[in-house]
Amino acid sequence: MRENLDEQTKRKLFAQILVNIAKSPEFSSAISEELGIAKDSIEAELDTGRQLDEQSWFRAYVLALSKWLLQYMMGSEYSIAVNLLPSYAYGVHAASDMVSLAYLMEPVAEPRQDASGLTKPRSQTTTCLSESDFGTQIIRRISEIEDLDHRLDLDRTLKVKMFTKCAKLLATLQYDLKAYKTFALAD
Image (cartoon, rainbow, N blue to C red; front, side, top):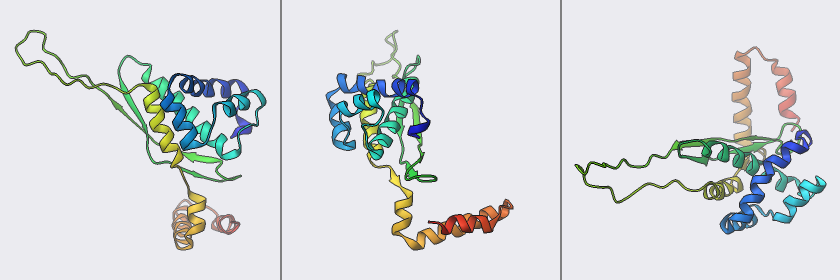
């Protein structure tokens, strides 16, 4: 992932993280405590391209991508809540070079107020969290991303079951099962 991300895109993605660190003590604290990433490390990554270790870079990249989506969705004329659901990482060419992210986006509607006075005014209003607050919640979810390769390495029964079911599915698609078996046994 890192090698395939051009410099201009990386700068645009990581910029919002630096803005939130500067503006929100909660966000700054969460990124440091939950992800182990310091502002200086992100700045050095942008300057030199290699300050963050692989896990920190992976987490910062997922956060940057999530922040971009969050900012894009919240920049519209209506309020929306963007939450990262439980997500998973796995390796194809290297450790954790793939990630499966799922987001739940829900509109946040303010309760209607009757200006005519025919109904009682609503005292409780719904407020949408700020982009920075949602970002802080996303940081916690990023720290919980499960490494599926690690999980399968710890549970041989689950690994065999998964590869057996995959083989059956691939067989229905007329995939070369010998090639799949070679791939599956390579690990």
